[in-house]
Image (tube, rainbow, N blue to C red; front, top):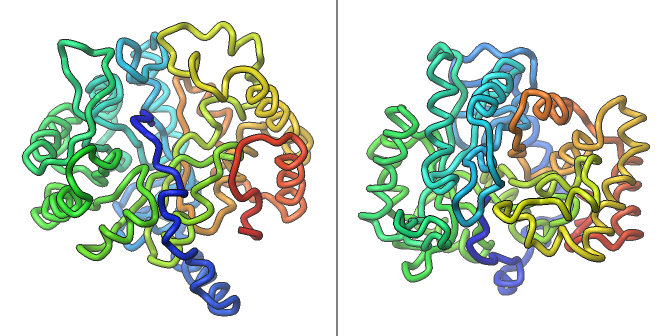
Length: 385
């Protein structure tokens, strides 16, 4: 997810936690009802799956697997938030492998690779029978200048701009309708009401199946909800970056808004395979090379946290990466996690998370590790938020 600016929970200081709005007994009943309704064995678009469990995606008519394929990295280099050079043929193979293994949704964005990610997704889907294709989610609101591809895209929420972006995405993806269309970041100048009404109109017109917001605060969600239901939220969330558990996740839980989180492995830090040496060797055209989480004491704390997942992974006969993603999925408000991959082997490295349930003891152990290492910020336990 391109970070065009902070959307911290602190901005929503005037919003009372939804957990505080629900009495303890009612909250438990509310959560149980949501989970019971959400748990399904097949998807709602007739796609035959290979046994991966799915959950109802908020109040939409979609049921999605607990993990989805994230297409940020495959956008390639030569733009402000690239991941360095990519092998497009490998990216196509990775997407097809994920679908073959049962994943039923892909999350991309127009801005990833400045259109290139959406084009790669189209290539990957081209040889998949239509009845077996996954849901395709994409985003709008970040507009770039082709004459300066390295410049940070502008955050624009004008109705005519969003409509142009939609038509361009439909063309690049080769689809007639977007399954989920999301405003990528709050606009720089336009009010939430202006661009959210545009997305609601696109849904009414049938050009998109569902609409959502990404990187928005609880206060902004509340503003949008007054115009029309916010189908989904896409925030950053991992065992390192936990701040949205304070306000945004409770808000979504109480409003039956589906949640798909990005960077559950914190851009590779929680895979168990990242090292200080690898961080130092990141190329200049990889955005992580200049990110604070990948340098100094923060990097050491983050890597220590990742290694603490090792015993848990061994107990479940899985990978550290899968444990990191499963921890994210243990939060009741979260429907699914967006996980990136550039090869089939990377997909296989975290796919266990789709079926892995961490025990109460596992969650206690992870909370203790977060406290001991001092990694990241935000609530550290799904049952103590």
